[in-house]
Length: 88
Image (cartoon, rainbow, N blue to C red; front, side):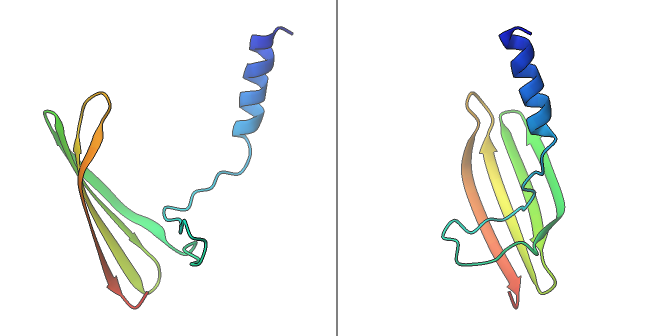
């Protein structure tokens, strides 16, 4: 087996492992956000602008993210607004 075959085999085996599918992560490690799940994602692209809304929630809180991107190379985040509702 050559190095390309070995690399392909490694990638296939590595992709079979469990993936971290949490939509939120506390970078400080102080909060457990594992109960949050993505409820909806929607967006609209108009030329070189993309507007998206993501709603993430657990049993008592709803986090709404409004995101505006400039589409290009690279695509960049121009504006972000987060609103947390509920008892979280």
